[in-house]
Image (tube, rainbow, N blue to C red; front, side, top):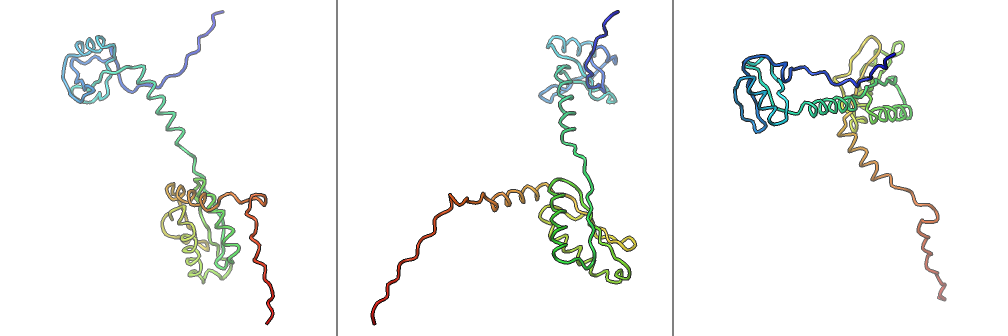
Length: 215
């Protein structure tokens, strides 16, 4: 039984190369930017003389545009580019926390800190302000809360549009801002330096001894 050969999958070319190019003439774009229209057979011969490949990059042009390049290196660059793009692509998750128009300061600070942490990690966040019962008549309080959220989160994000009412809920969306987050992290690193341990902390300076003098 013959052993099957395993081959690594290469990036799929979207253009023709070398003998696959069968038009009578092509336009060659050289590395210095100059161009020349020549017969395809002459262009292939030129590529062979330079140990390069004739690669068609604009098949719909008249005549088709080609360049002289190393096909193997081109495939490697394409593969590396695709891998880099996949590394840069991050799945953005929508995180949500709920508030009420009368949310107290402690609860507001606690939840806002979590939203800030989500944004610093690159997540998109949604703050949902829920109006229970007849509290919907206090829409202005919900909008005030939305403005407070916007101000607090402005150091790491940008608000995505205006707050929107849907029934008895007010939605506010925030997008992470990488530049703001980087600046925030630098400031935080400077202000939160390592605390001194008791052994390294400076010893207190004794107060000068006071003596009573007779009147």
